Image (tube, rainbow, N blue to C red):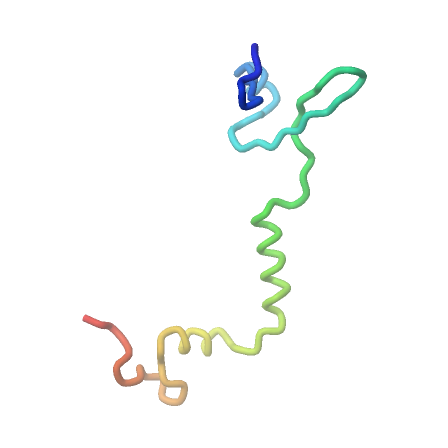
Length: 91
């Protein structure tokens, strides 16, 4: 097989299947004893996991209750629980 002008090669299907190299799998190239080896990359937490961890930590000191947030997002009057004049369904 040849390397393309973009530096790409195709990993044969049999190899991909045997080693679980599916679309989106991160791989890395390792130089060892004069050979180049391709292997699954050893990664830390996935990006989504990092975001969830960050948001969980950030939300610990949040001063509003869920009910207060819902009233705020719905435009409800905090005292009465009813929509303020001019708010609500535009239909």
